[in-house]
Length: 205
Length: 408
Image (cartoon, rainbow over all chains, first blue to last red; front, side, top):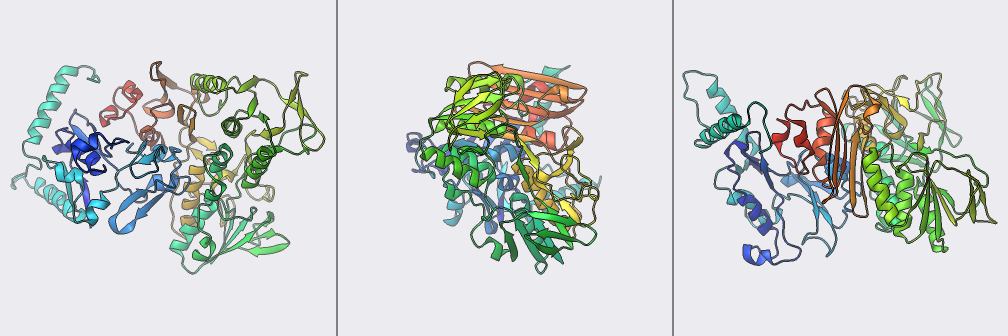
């Protein structure tokens, strides 16, 4: 089973995934008409700043066990086992924000959504684009990501790549593979610049 | 293996499900006082408010007991517990256990006053209580008196205001929710409620209720008389442990449990509102009588009862409430005086009415009070609950959004 894997070291913070996510969850499925829909489609992936101001695409991890699922008062959150997806039933959701308190990643938002009854504020988060997947597609954020910060693959494949990299890194003789060619340089630059700008005490900007 | 679970609330339900997953053949008996399907207790305040119908309260389908092969014993409370013989008494019957979970929950803290037997005077704890209040509303109740400014009293007052009643609230401290929020946030809540018409009276108690069949007025401790046709008592809860032999099991306020939610008696576990475990933020024993705690503790207790040793070290007081246009989320230490060596930072933005108070002890976040922009409060909660040292500049955590830079 394929899942979305996030590689923050490759994220350049372009936020195209946010646009793609919002469009994918719109009625029209196209950017321009989507802009005029009401309620306006919103992204379920949120690009923030990482440790050195690199981009950080923050999305639902579909945890197992999921703290939001355990905390949900009306039992609106369930796991769809065959897709490893934690889903919110908007008809059952009562907008109590218990899941906001439980989510350690801060990825749940509360607003109106096309999937819910008109005028009802509900908890909204990543649904792994199950609708697109059913039609043979892949999650919109992955499809649009050009830097390779978001991939859609089996966890086995992702783990193997990391394990191989670690294995190579312990041998001085083996050439180290640059996991994120170019981005490593960019991130090193960002980090150095930030340290210069902010010493002695780092600041918010 | 014979498992007996006292309580069919969320702790008992999660325990039963955890046991059933790990032990398909063991016998599970579940004793519940309320003859209902397991239901969501916190949602009764939303039923009162009118935002959720009664029919939405059950948290499991009608086939729950059958699905999990649970033998329910409903409608009566446990009256005795013999830890040497390994049995509990319920409704004149003796039920033997190999493993016992006490998830008996808590009862409303009783008050002392005359005339408590009159109609339309209710505690707010159970489905039956909220039905009684709804009946009073149908009967045309217009003026409500709410005793207590804690979570229950507060939710009752809010619910009744949403129903269009004139509500007077009697509280001991200067602002509502004084156990849940700091003084500043408490002031914001009080202002909002007052602006919507709540009449709050401080340092005053009801002494006598008057009326023919149903309550018509209350005489207060300052000698004044207040007309009211509905009274809600919300003065907190006490663990329901009348049946527990205190000479055989260590009881403080709740049943004292170890890391594995086991009590001092062999094969007896406790979870939920009846259990007292180590609070993460306070680092001392504490009864955190809240739904998410009960849900988590029940699950872990069930796993331990079924034979796998799993510690539970995450007990933390916390709450999230939406009232009118305010969203409030709190966790851990809200009163910095409560523990030693705290450092407090706050930020208030009058334009957006966003407020944050963060309480640190050394390099750990131990408490938070957030008003508005609460969506990512769970990240701060995770910092508290996992005791993660905060190395970066603490002020960054006061920003309404959250970036991982902030904790680096």
